[in-house]
Image (cartoon, rainbow, N blue to C red):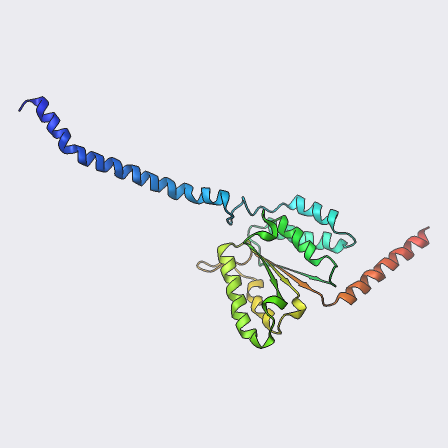
Length: 234
């Protein structure tokens, strides 16, 4: 056999090996690219716990509260300060808890909606915003032990998926007695620990109708004092 024939025979014998290596390389590369780009492509179209979907708009939040909430300077100043401080802190000491009290129509839900819209791209429709209405989800005092397990698991499951979760509890004044206690561990100082869920970036908003008459009375007195002061100044 001449040299030319020998070379041809070697190419024929090596061809399956070369093809296998080539195919394996192509498949491996495809898997590698898929593993790297897959989540990015998925999160481009579907909500994920990433900056594209969760990007606090501090300037917009400040403007919206001052522009759209009337006659409640405590909301626009105190709440805004608490939110900005929490959102700008990459490692807060604990979760942020806000409590809005007042009669129906006083703007509690409206302010909660504004907050959600300026933290989550999908606002209240976000998978990471959890609206919990006490009378709908926890109607019976006799089932409080079951509700405790249910609520605890819901918070743990939600925050494990996205540390920047928002929980809005409506009608807190009608919540079964003792149920609120299950949230205390999530609201306390919670140092980061390897292997544990970090709740410190979460936000809990509690809405309640209790104390509405007291709040209205205080607002009325404040308005009367300002009116009296202006009258004397004139």
